Length: 193
Image (cartoon, rainbow, N blue to C red; front, side, top):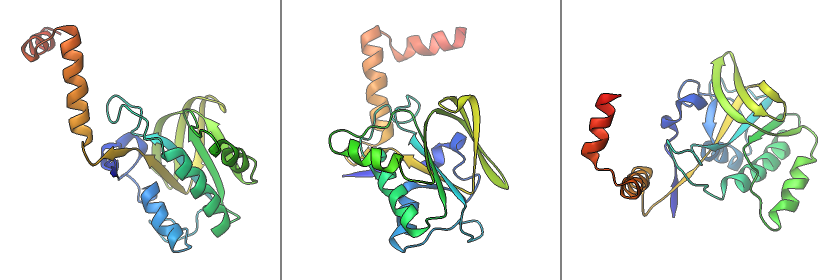
């Protein structure tokens, strides 16, 4: 089994800065009740932005792909459009990973009206009334922005057998062994820098 990565560690994605930045797990609870609302005030959003790889494939958080987030987001976009067909959905991804038959599902979601799919990197998520998602290196341009009423973070999954800290410690130990560095040498180098 696995558990979602701790979203409070993802400050640049706006989690905690706005009640309207939620995780895919929190959206799942809403959709199970056939509801969609902004937690800050209970109103129905007009646009929801999904951010893929929130904490995944990131050396500062989870250096691996959780391999289920893309499919979960596609399913949630489909369910969101069923619950609230007038709500726009935008998905910002690095790479949409939908192997095998999931590629057909991806193409179906991509062709739905009211759905925007764009590749891009997230610079920041800012909450000032509406939420602004700042993008770079995106299909929308080098520097683009999307406004949203609700942002959903597709956070990575941490295996129950090892939390993110244990994985990071293992990777750091492997790198030190490969480079022949000791912790003392790293501290001395940092002090000189």
